[in-house]
Length: 178
Image 1 (cartoon, rainbow, N blue to C red):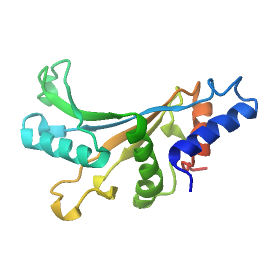
Image 2 (tube, rainbow, N blue to C red):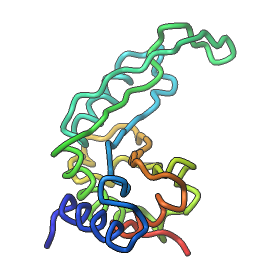
Image 3 (cartoon, helix red, strand yellow):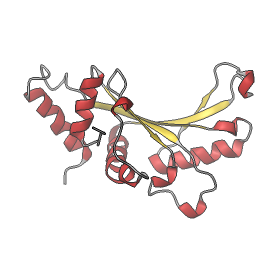
Image 4 (cartoon, rainbow, N blue to C red):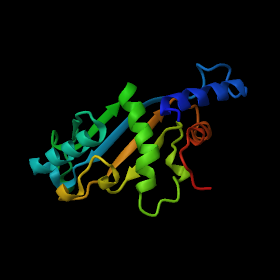
């Protein structure tokens, strides 16, 4: 079986050969994967932030960075500089292994999964998938989970439009709802 990177390169070559793009350098490619999670009411509790950091570290194999509030929002009790989320940006070999694991192992483990909605692709051709329960990842031990955490996985491609992104991700093997 081919690795995700080999499939990715094959899809780019096919798109260029079909005449949809002038050459392979113009064909869409996966640039990075960003995994981010909000900490919710963890802005006041450091243990919540550390729990989310631990989960994302286990899932991605890379330590996340904390994202802080740029402005204060009194209705939510957030001050400027409070930690409101954590994120990981994957590139290179970690990106390829995460993409392969996400496509082949994690997506089929979603409860009642029928496919990804086509509206999950934005106008720039990037794919955004929400994960409601982090226990679908095989790295997580369900016996040690105290709270379910949700996060978003963004696959960033250099596609020129939503249609180009849809075709690119479909050819990579991502299942979309018809």
